[in-house]
Length: 89
Image (tube, rainbow, N blue to C red; front, side, top):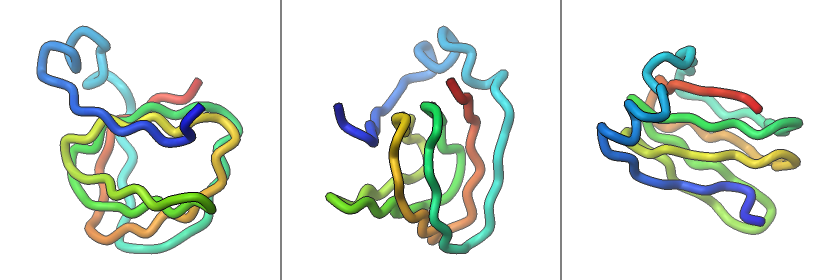
């Protein structure tokens, strides 16, 4: 199973999934290590990030819907300040 999945959702799909009712997380330009002990789904409203894993890097930007699967170890490199809706589990 891929550890990071990046998709594009249209407004209908975003509405159908109730994504706009999820909490919002914001982060300034920074770099930090992270471990996912549960799955996270999120929709990036603003910003740009490079997620570095031992196998590959993923560039994420505004409009991307991302699934970070349980067990992922990575480094977040926040290039432009991030604002995203998120849901764990």
